[in-house]
Image (cartoon, rainbow, N blue to C red; front, side, top):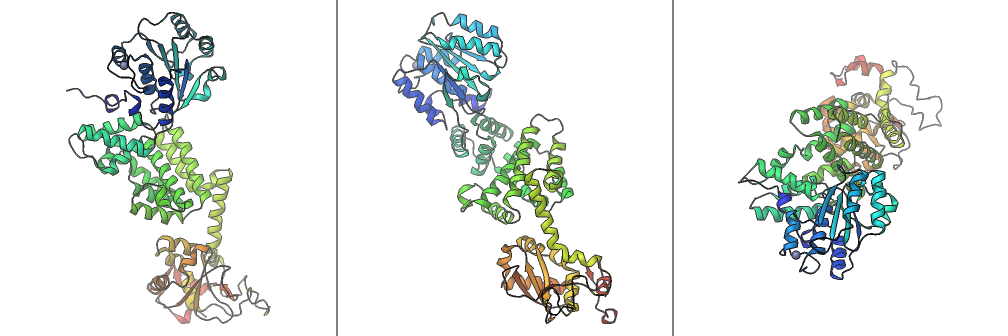
Amino acid sequence: MSYTALYRKFRPDNFADVKGQDHIVTTLTNQIKHNRIGHAYLFCGTRGTGKTTVAKILAKAVNCEHPVDGSPCNECAMCKAIQAGTAMNVIEIDAASNNGVDNIREIREEVSYRPTEGKYKVYIIDEVHMLSTGAFNALLKTLEEPPSYVIFILATTEAHKIPITILSRCQRYDFHRITIDTIASRLEELLNIEGVEAEEKAVRYVAKAGDGSMRDALSLLDQCIAFYLGQTLTYDKVLEVLGAVDTEVFSKLLRRVIQGDVTGSIHILEELIVGGRELGQFVGDFTWYMRNLLLVKTSEEPEEAIDVSSENMKLLKEESTMLDVETLMRYIRIFSDLSNQIRYAAQKRVLVEIALIKLCRPAMETNLDSVLDRLRVLEQRIDERPVQQVIVQSSGEKRPDISGDNPENHQAAPAKAAPEDLQKIVAGWRTIIGQTTGMFKQMLQKSVPKYNGETGESVLYVEFQDFLGQTYVDNPEAVKELQDIIAAQTGKSVEIQMLVANKHQHTNLAQVSVDQAIRENIHMDIVTEEDPDEIE
Ligand SMILES: [Zn+2]
């Protein structure tokens, strides 16, 4: 038994079955009902949104012997002939391959003859923007004085390429991209008719992958059904067939990118390629992932705005605190540029790699967004500086940032050195932070470990530089987590107080400088046994 592709089998043959273009269907059926049919129509919109389908239904409706409520009856001889493509009075022309003056002149000669059957001669010119200038001029002449029995339906994906002289003579209809909901419910309907079981999540993924095009969604669904004939269509199977990537991988990749980890990001890409994933699909899906993230970040009720599982929502919310809107917009811009370039590129992989490197290394770009992202990276480095500063300092002498001679300047001139316990902790600060996770880690990376320079008491003040650190202030669990890690790392139990920079009253806090001796005793940030004789 031969198999008919879904999109052919279920191509709408009347206006009622056309999905997602209600505004157009209503206008056209009204025109037919009231016999106010135009002579030139321009149908614009992306591929697979139903332009030629509607054109054919319109051709039938105007010629139908017994139209029903503005729709063709699909029963009469005219409807059947047009449906079968044998009617002489409905002429379909693909302008992509017939774009010359001569092709249009032929039409001009033909239109002078009345139709031998039916009421109207209907010319459907697909991809009309492909016509040459000469052909457009020839077409214009016909459009200026069309015989009463002729209708032109021009269809295009690129309305901006149509000369204004043509536009001004047409009724223009803009076909919308079809929403995921509309496509998904149509797919459900057809799967029911076909007797194929499918998970809702699987159907939604296919609908989303159609990217506003019913035809694309149907061909994708076809592929999936053909691959797993007779089986229930699951989400995993759909991902497999379409060469798509599970959302979890996007989360992993994005986190690498935020950390500026080029090697890690490229490694994830490598795994995807080895796993046989399709790169064009991947780029589109990752862009979509970041778009969702942007919605989570900017919307009051992200659950309403985006369509993801609760576990993915948790990841998205966590990630939304890791980067700012400008950076995210930059990422999205780079990836949507990429999705345009990649379609016809031979070296898809190289292009994706370059894009990932651009995300990780804003310094490679010179526009405003990337400069903002560079600032973000620099700020982060400045926040981390106290630890790095220690490394370049020389031994036990007076520290450059402390001017002990000036007793009045308490903030800048703490009299006492930080207790040696704290120095040890700070010397191993990065290793300690490295053992925390999630947002706490992000906040700690933007924190400065301090102590009270006046009293020299053995309390570690963790000063968050980001106001979001407020979550951890007076949070006993966070304190305990950090204390446990410090205890395991240094063998010290220390009192910890967390606060947010510029939002606390402690004016005597100073950065902890680490003596050379202590630092030398701590190799590679790993604290060895305490030996008090060595420090003095
Ligand atoms: Zn009919």
